[in-house]
Length: 151
Image 1 (cartoon, one colour):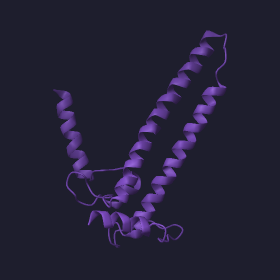
Image 2: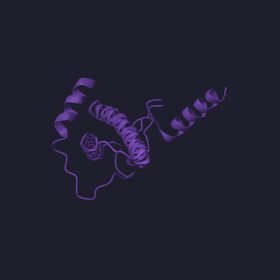
Image 3: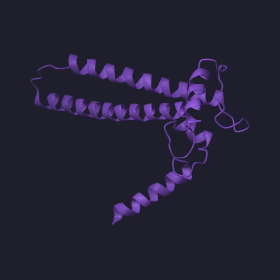
Image 4: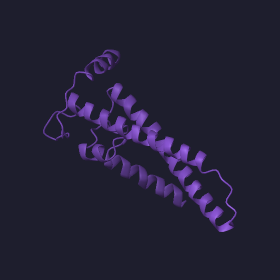
């Protein structure tokens, strides 16, 4: 059953029409074809933006390699470069989470909590389309993490 669902999902994604300004609504069936396509496009656009930013960073770092005689200016530039690299590392991790969300779409699992299996709210998914847990499950998870950190 899962294999046919995946194959059917892949065939359907080219045929789904989204009107300009479409946004998922609570009064339509959860994760219907339009909602799935909306989130697929949202994830793909986000990924494209992150990758474009990474390319710009790499080009900037390559162009920015120069000898700066003033110690303070050099330290400032090194700090800027370290911050940029940390930002890019965060973007790289986000890209892998986006890829995982796209896989969940292909497998028909997107939008459902990995802990409870319940639907994740459309509001949460719109704000954070890489979410894997419902807000309630995420809060429980964070409370447990905090308890273990405090030990």
